[in-house]
Length: 162
Length: 456
Image 1 (cartoon, chains in turn orange, blue):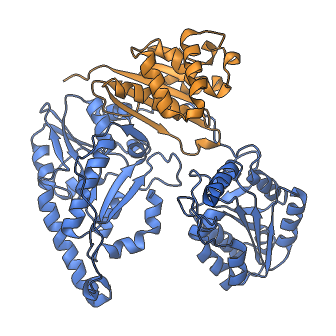
Image 2: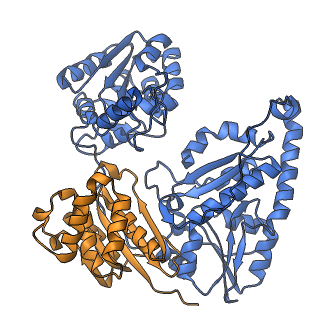
């Protein structure tokens, strides 16, 4: 028996940046597309600004909830200074998605950088914008919907003006 | 509760195994292999053996749900508490769950029925109770051989893996062709199932996180199984480590890059407290909470941390045993929530057996249980769902129990004055308690919301 190909994503940053919300959104998109999904994280004392990372994996069937080191297809980095810490997660053919790919000054709220990076990630995955936006709305309070949908589209289109 | 929580609850747990359960009693306890945020790496499967409790171990969210319903049935049928053993990675992961269309309903007992023979564990009652428990376990063991909790995944004959919990998921990914015996009921162990499985494969290895619990169980029953190398006893398992276990790879493992350590928040009141404790050259007996971070730079103020409540015990012990010049430098530091959980008996000890140099306790009251996500406690005046209830006032308790020198202040208002108070208290051979009250910055807004909600 061979293990069917699954997609491995690691999201990393610092406590308070929305790392866990980011993987919640990815997991929701994949689950609603009918795929098996697992996600995991360690957030011991991370609320105090320490390093946080979270794994999300989806495909036909997923066993372990953790992305093995060196097997991430995508590494989404919310904090530039954390790239080195997490670099070993990425597979040799994997794609790094980081803050340099988004023009932060154009975001109406700097805090939505995580969702802007999901916009950049979405270009590599087969889910529709509608599915992404629905998942974003389900995982964030209503007051943040507009800002984050804007951020998602900005990240996706690499549009610099909102 | 966490693994260490069961240490605190162990006393009632052992006797509860003897007394018959009405309805169901499931004790959920999560171990922390790798110590993501714990002080030790104990394997609570040992508690199931020590207390004589059936134990169930799920391996993902779906099983955590399904097995819980089955554990209720197990507890109801045999009238025993069931130890529901989780680990960090089962708790801190999310997997898809199909809900049971007809979950069992819960009914409160209609009326109280007196049964002191089974419920009052005086020796005359406890002796037959122990025999009843062992008889139940024998019968549960027999049923466990064909239980829904255990399953075999048939694969190749040359490699068989016995596993449980999260390790099962790693095993299926690391060795997709292997035969696997997955145990969900891990006490009492289904030894005949293990024996049959082991004899059906050429190589039989146990892959488990933590202690060699399954290995020892199998070997005690006379089943020769291969164990993992000692280096894999430490830390969490993952797919890569399971591959190494199967290959008996004893080479050094790659070290993960050091991430940014957690730190006290900017503006946190604890910062002022630890700066002062550092400046007065105190020997600080610390406790469990955000303020554990006082051990790290730039403060480097905390000298010991052991378990909840240890600030009193370790601090008093140091006061009693060190030479007077060092003894008077000893200061205990505990948070409001930890004081409520495990500090009150330590306070009694401090008053009952005061050290000759006195003792200084600082209670850092930030009005919430901050580290674990803003849970209420008996000192906040709100219940866990944030509605109003009676409040235990820390300084009232301290005074009522007999401490004469009690100071209540916001230490951030005048840090120099706080430092002077510490210095003066350390010089006096008397018992001093300083309640340093400063609301956690992260919770100030939430408290306002909860209290406004209450007024409506």
